[in-house]
Length: 488
Image (cartoon, rainbow, N blue to C red):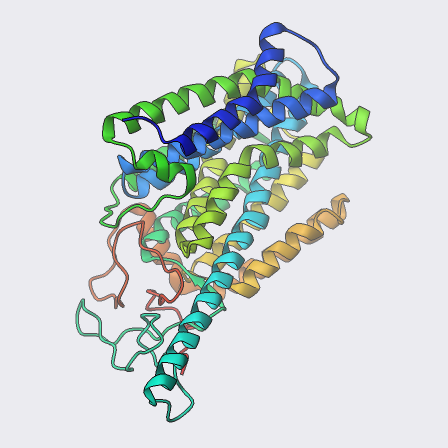
């Protein structure tokens, strides 16, 4: 089966973008650091798109929560390549120790402080637009039939189905229990019950994260613990069932539409080509970032902390935004949560090992005062994110709050200011943890693989599959969520 022209065009564009970097690397040509940063950075972005398309299309053959976990892992492989290079190089050159931590904390905070709110706000905007369209259509239809009698046409009466024409007599198909009323339109993005697996693991990692600043380093033994947590996460994700049909967008949809043999050959080829580009580009890109700081008058630490993650995570953000625009906001957010998990586990756990392989001694990747401060801020931000997620409901105000706190850190750059900002994250997290305490045990139980009590109330749309999405018009499936309100 031949590849579609549209797919070939996308592949050709990515290869054209990466070609200059491959030419420079293979020929050994030296260029100005700023030019090298742009050329090799563009190659990393191009390879990231190829990886993201291949990983997403691979879900056609790998279903369930495991597919989401693997997609999240593969999508950030370019970031791993850059970060592990810094850690490896730090083994022989202590000046590079700061950059390994800088890249990790920057990408971690970028993902939660910018990526999560972006997806949530887009998903809510799409839901609001869809609801307005349904109400307008319902009002026009009712007016034509002469059925508008009370001015309430198109207002949902509590069925939770999102059709805008409910009867108010909703019952659960799982046991005749009355369904939870629909959450107010435009106020929150609802997550499926299966998301508790990811939330539980992220909660565990958010607590373990505070061990790093307390020790002032990342010991190899602690890295092994984090890698073991990631292995357990993959195993638990692999046991999750999935009965829903996958949905693909863009190039991934074109790949998924191929016959099985062609699809698998294409996916394998993309992985090989993308990995080759990344391996050839990661080192010169990482070196160029450090050397470009002096030429541009910008701190090399800042370039490594923010520019490298922007390049490596751009495709992941774009894919998540596309899902949110298509009304699949919950799926997009769960994928970003999975990325957060593998950053705090596999990535952080690999840093001291790479440092040791590069010649480092002492059995740990050391951190200076600034890096400790960065880890504290990143850990408190993660804890706040977990506290928001516990109720399986991501409110619009929480997304705006996270985005605002993320923006403030670019203004508050001093050590004292960073610790104050960390304290603000902790206070907000404590308040939300108290409010959402009913969701703590279910999340930890999901991570441990223990089933929920048989007496748990389930509303419609709760199922076990990862692909269940609460896009526009869906209701919360959390029976313990006290903040769900009726639209009546």
